[in-house]
Image 1 (spheres, rainbow, N blue to C red):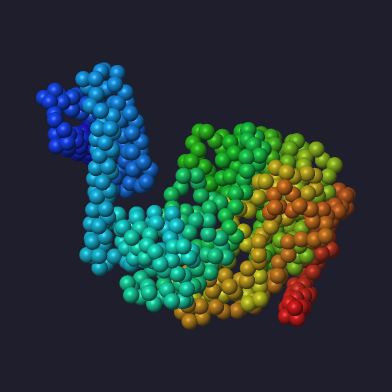
Image 2: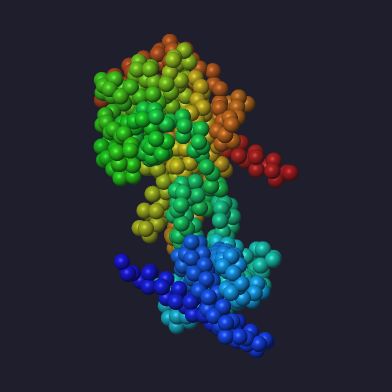
Length: 640
């Protein structure tokens, strides 16, 4: 079928044929001038032309020279042409030598003709490419609605972005300069554009164009550097974008191309991209039946996505909320189709009969228990539900895991379980105790504890976004509050690694990086929206909520911390209670639930929870101690 692509290739071949004829004609003319030529010499040139033309064209086709789009050609495309012509010329020389002296016009003449042909071909391609760029640049300047941009990063990624914007006629942007910190590039030109130093003088230079937006094109840019560059340009009122993967590096599928996108809050607050799921982890889950309770939630659904990548024998999603379960089912079905044996079961971890039916039918080998109530203020008000769903639900699920011979059971816990100041945190600490006491079981029980997950259901990020969209104010409970954050894919990947290496009773603690002040988070999110904190959008303190801490903790006894082969995963060895002791605590909670089930925010429930979880303290006491410790740390650092 004759297409536009085939038409272009034919035109290129015809052009090359003309160049080769011109090269041989010029060579023949030079021979006429330099020496006496007989009539037979003309025939030799014609025969040589036919042989060389056939060999070189076949060589170019074999090396796919005509597959290149020459207006976007790079050094590799030009090199392929040189190699093709060299190979074709060598083959032609060998053929002429083999045929005989009547077709051999002299080695130096043949080599000179081939070199001339190759050079003229390269020049023609280069002229075409530069002509296209000049036309695109002139077109960009012709239309004033083009947005002028400066590209931060004059390296390979930045130059590719500049070329793309300059060559694509439909682009809304026109690059006018680069900004870089590399002294070897400053003052020079890349892709025809000047490179300026990233200092305070650069703003005066950019105003001469004038630059309207900033594009950052730096590969593997970590959070600290991203924040530094972002603040450097936004303080002058520039809008800043990233030339990066659609998602963070750790969650970008292989083969994903870079795109221009807006900054996200995780680009500013979090560490460099890390690969969290290695081959040994993937192999552990391959060909196994895996059950995820709460599989429709933020963490549960991401666990399902990452487990699906590991080619499990069967993946079972268990959730009480059918809409979320349906959503993740459809996502996985679209992506994997029949290659993934996926089952969705609707039910509650409170219902032992339903759990028994699911475990009996599927006989899972690995269970991730992510089903839980997690919202602190709501669980303070509905404290009875926290015990029924979190504590007793975990107990029910762990019982079924033992009954049906599950190989590994991994509980998803939280930093709020450490010295809890609220019912939700205390209930999760009780969940840890429930699974830690089963050290005599054939099932390996372990827990993974981490902090807030960025963008998860009920997290502060969606709240702030909604408040900014409504014009403010953005509400925070206290300016002093700090929290640990992790992205959903990163947290889920580390949970899977911890599950693969888990031993009986292990309590894994994930390295959450540096804690983030919620006030700083609010400021950054307002800036990312192109607005000014406390000028365009007010940040308003509303006071701590019931049961809320100023500072979250991740460990109970830091001196017992043990490193694993993964630098982001640690093990805390906490002495477990016996099954009998745990059963006694559970009976107290069951009795409290039974007697207070008809009450709203029963104080009895909270008191019983405090009695069974010794580390459960009042928020005022913990916050006062934490604030004293923080003030002491500030004084000590000041003295230093």
